[in-house]
Image 1 (tube, each protein chain N blue to C red):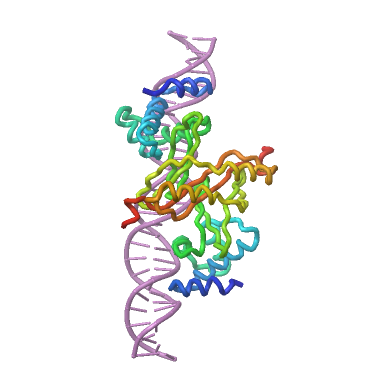
Image 2 (image 1 turned 180 degrees about the horizontal axis):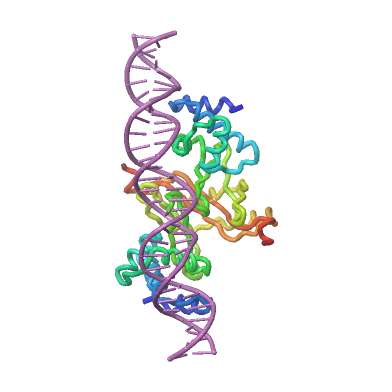
Length: 145
Length: 145
DNA sequence: AAAGAAATAGGAATAATTCCTAACTAGGAG
DNA sequence: CTCCTAGTTAGGAATTATTCCTATTTCTTT
């Protein structure tokens, strides 16, 4: 089940709790549990539809945008053009290793914090909000082709 | 004028030199000279059309893809959904600081090479090809709004 | 239980990019 | 210099991803 943590957090943030949103949260949570492969809107819709057939793609997009704004999910943008999302686990921060062949995504724990600090100092008039760091290449499977 | 360097390089790579491609290269070169703000396909087409009115958007996309494949340009993908391109200047490597308000892009010289090396070692079966590192935030102008 | 503000479905609209095909052309061979 | 051909182009159609629109529904507070 969805850990109460997220529901409480949404409530605290004043985000209205509709069944659609709960289902989407559920899908994101399951993803996070089973390997953490980020999902795109289309996939979320398909998953949700197995249990909540009526949901519209627009609702999925809107909800993911809301969750992103509230810091519940991370919106990722890789080279392959479709946005993907992952649940933000409290106290965790990571980046990604992406296969250019099959699109498989792997988390990497390292973060270039030192550089971010340096940039924060050198560009004091720029207010840093977030950052993305992604390494692209070919996984064992794909490098043979 | 376009430095011979690029034309020679294209020739050496066996890339056919059409007037369209030369014009696109010219536009990218001018951009690089005047501040290095990366361009998207639409903008490239508009610029080229002032001197070569017949060019199609498809040709611009195809050419930019070709140049990217040959290492002549860098394809960038920021959060705002449209791809942008910048000329690769030999011996130079940089990342980007992007304003979430106005989209203004600034180059940053630092690169998390140490992390990339560590990842290369830890994930020996993954063949690293490239990486992207982008810091997002608000520029002096936009942080007031 | 009622009211109001916010969210939803579904389809239309938009934006970015790619595909398709007939016509054209750069560049090497003769 | 001319010819040939594989690679390239224009233009519009098609595709993909995302957002917009609006009448209807539904949380949440009272």
